[in-house]
Image (cartoon, rainbow, N blue to C red; front, side, top):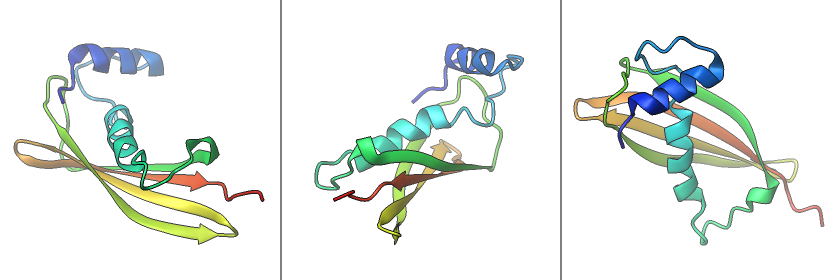
Length: 116
């Protein structure tokens, strides 16, 4: 997928940031969340999105990204833990370009347990 200058501009403007062509640090959520959704929307996985809350997000950049870069996103479920009848789903998405790994993005989702 291409990080278009227009998408970076819209994202920067929405956050009130200057648009200097540099990808804002949290921009990757706009790429990694859809990539992770494809993983957990698998009917066999059985995630009920009506019970999901976004709990945490972390980013580790290895190189700067600029508008115009072409990247791929590969999501992995790192863990599923049950705490007090609720699940914590930890996902990692690796963002890479032709030169290799650019960033890692971790997302933790809280999945409320069945109230019955």
